[in-house]
Length: 123
Image (cartoon, rainbow, N blue to C red; front, side, top):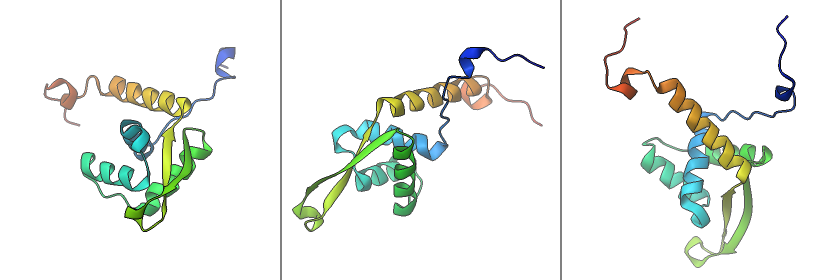
């Protein structure tokens, strides 16, 4: 039986999925301007992928339950027909999780042919 160091028993590790990482990263980049529609537009622009409003808000709710995002209703605006925006803020825990995801992806990619520019092995 392998003995696991004690410090690992008390740690809580949150591994993000790809879309969760993209959403947190975009929201962090938008800063105080982060709200649902702006996040969706930015994801579609920079990730070059479609983002349904359902997937966006389902993921926002999941990340908020994990403590990685905080949301609140902003002021109603005339440009939105008097409707309020659901504002999004990345928590320190969310920033930490995104940083860990990024670092993990950099580590696992370091020897990949697309990261090194060198031809890779064929399987």
